[in-house]
Length: 472
Image 1 (cartoon, rainbow, N blue to C red):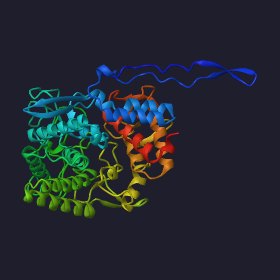
Image 2: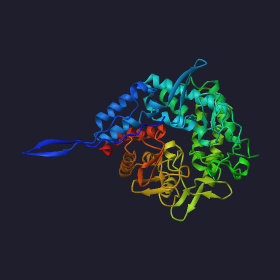
Image 3: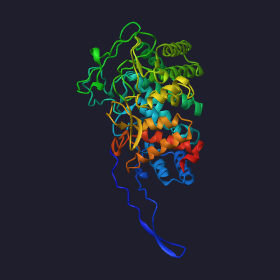
Image 4: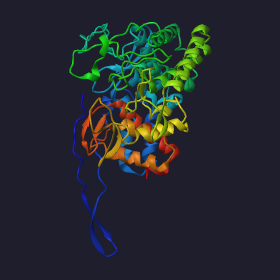
């Protein structure tokens, strides 16, 4: 389903009496209703609706209020399907106009609503159902990144040269895909203190996550995963018979693809390995909390330490301009890739994931590098500036990168500038997109992209709570 296009109505001239003269005044612009009608919404949260009402009542910038109303609930409005399967709640979230559920995106699509779980039991049950569904997907195939709601369906990538099971949309091994469900489980527990979801199936999924991570350390061989696709797009394929270029087994975990679904150049994707450190520690904590398998918890903690030490040893590069910085990808043999990609996890967004401190000096150096022309995928034009990536092509800025920049900043002027860029980027649609051209916001990709919409709402809500003066 595509969002219908519309043209913002022109301002209506009104007449007012000022002193003794009649003057024609341009009225404030009207913002048409573009949010899905109530009767067509897939899920409604009272707590989220109350937050929208509060934001609209307190924030005087009408365009930002309009954008918040449209964007913040977009995942709930358009993406959610709930069901009861074998006596358990299950929630399936489509990625948007790509009609499948990604482990990464489905977590990100509900992340912004987690602070409201204590106030809304239906919302809590919906998120719990998503955790159940993610567990089922991991157990089906831990190497797959995206799944169908119909477990018998075979889609457009059924002929990829990799073992494809019915119900799998795409089988691109992305390290972050197994980190995001742990992130969701851990934060769900933090807000609810409910451990009932961490049953035998959840524990089995965690064991499979650990097994997959160990396979992809490639200490003894290349592991079982390989992937090739018949395509002209190099970023949709892996060289070397589908295993990617060789790496030296230094303790890091290979990721065949980036969170943008583009192939890595060097398989040790640094931001995803930082994310894995956090995820392994969180999973170990939850396993101990429920008195699960202590040996698995201990293995997870040991692996987290191993990966962390390997990052400190191999992922830090001396840059002639910025000093010590984190590489984006490495191979453990001395080769590295200095860049950043807009999707999350990227180097810029690591503090947002709890993977590194916002005050870490190496991160701060890296931040300067990736937000400059020294990052080959940083674009700056008349419509804004931000990071893109090879997934869409040159000169296309991803709003996710602007949002990540704001969410990882403590500088009022930087945060405000990011919000203003995002406010100007919606191209009269009232929604945030996957990417837009650096000189023309109306040249954009993906009219329906719930993750970008929801995280933009998260940024506005966070700013309203902590720095409301920036929303004037």
